[in-house]
Length: 513
Ligand code: 6LW
Image (cartoon, rainbow, N blue to C red):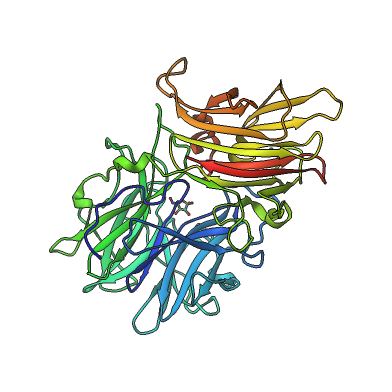
């Protein structure tokens, strides 16, 4: 691989807990997906910079069967680890709220992955499982312990048979971490004469960091790196914050890299709405065998980071299926839409409100830039149903704009709703009827007339027949941050249809720029 100049983030929008492996000159990267179905997006790249979406690894209900109630950025699928060994790809991850840790495998990562191989009951518990394949055929599994087994907070390890999920040795506590709270996200790898144990520490918020220790044995004891943490932006001037949860990779030329999560906060006190994104930095090794991330300097946001080429999608891919960028919340994915022959997506209502934690006719894509415009065109099909566009974090955190054609003859209304935890506000405004409606969300910085310390807003508009945009409602974007709502999510832009069962509505296209 030739020298590259890194343009960060490498995966914008909600892509936390990145994990990476390499097969010859191709890198593969996967991230957490929580309540999204399908789950665990997989990307590939030859230069670590340009990432092509391959598929979602968990794409069948037999692999990811949520309980009915599911949040988008909480519970569900937590931090995975992706590894390649002897012709097979392994992904190990945890479904919170279900049995726990499981492995899926594939020979062709672009094809279907196996059904889950659940770890046995004695080796469940905790989060962030990882796998290490040793040369003698031994496979080690590390997890972040949850204290359930009487272990202190930190990293536990056991030998595992990854084909059956059976733990071969009992759980052994191997590290409490290297000095900070919430030690998690372990990865174990070898280089030269040492085994290195990589950890995320400090909590995934502003104190987040990456630390490392080494040992001549994969079981420790660990000598901490003298310049731990090897990566943190805590307290530093940088547009990227909360950097942590990392994975290392060596390229074909023997050069090392680290992928890690970070956020792009806005306003004061700073909050982030796009979710935790994936970043990349080079790693050099000192003469004494310790990693130096990004030459010891903070990682910077590239100039191009806030510009993404726009796209327009009419939902259907070449195979006649819903295109790969779309996800839903929870298990209802296949029961909430049809792909009509004519054009676009037909949403099949399952509930009367986006506030329900249960199934809803909503499909969305990550919002990927702090300034972004999402547009769609909707064709109402059922009277009294609401068909619209939303900026969505959770069922208790979203703003939405929908069109409602009322059956009592009172006309057509644009309905703007905001839900923030236990506050709910709904406003309606009559608008002239049209056969279809263009709806728009702008995530924008508009200092005029707004709190100058926190100028980021979400502005919702509908286009008139003459093509003019009519603003229906707006609100502060910071209310849809994880700092307010909790959880591990990020903003999605979604289209939805609400109403009595049997209500439908069509969305012709969707664009983001
Ligand atoms: C993940 C943990 C973390 O399991 O956040 O930032 C948790 N690190 O390692 C959820 O993404």
